[in-house]
Length: 279
Image 1 (tube, rainbow, N blue to C red):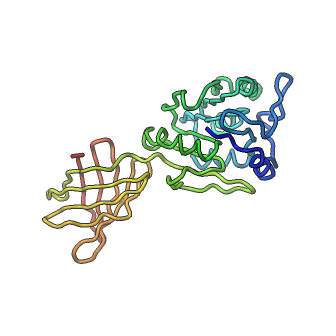
Image 2: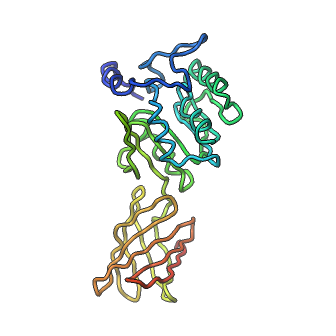
Image 3: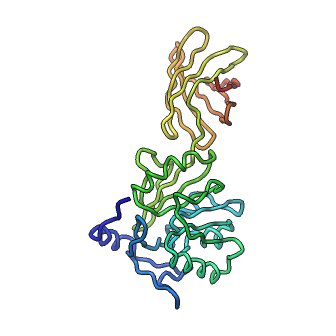
């Protein structure tokens, strides 16, 4: 994997280094003193500003019910903040052994070792599939490499990235703070394929193509075929439209759970149940 160049490092530093962490003592301790901009495995280390850390975790709606995994944990500040400010349990994965040990000491200094642990490991080898929230501050190439792994996680898992997006997977929300930016996604369920559906006792066939959280396709019902448009998933919840012969639009909203679909369609003020089974 290509490391970021030294010239790129200096481009990033003025933008990101205006704030150091108070929680995790980013300037180091008696055993280890990391340098801002130091290179690691495929990344450089730059501490995330406190304001952006808080906004990222708030956007992901982190609570004490969550398990947060921070990929490329650095000094541990995001994992620590998730526990200290939002009550979550969290795990940081950090490749650099000295940085991982430093992060663990920061965890102990923050008094959250009962809720936070730091793993010295490779984010592409460690298992983080039990996470309900994933945070990351990597580079664009690594985000794109992680994308298929993240999209196989449980629908509804929240993913939040400092600074960098994820290729053609459009963010559900863009996070803006003073001189900082982040991106937020909710892992979409898999809705693509063929669905046998029933609407008010009438049988039909729904065929869908999906790309990330967006989908389109067709609905065959009563001997007619309708185009499915504006399909969008937010976790396991979805919405889509289709146009009837009288040019009125039907709005459909519901949830998908593996082989089952439960929804309602609305035409004007009327609501009708729509249920489906994966074909």
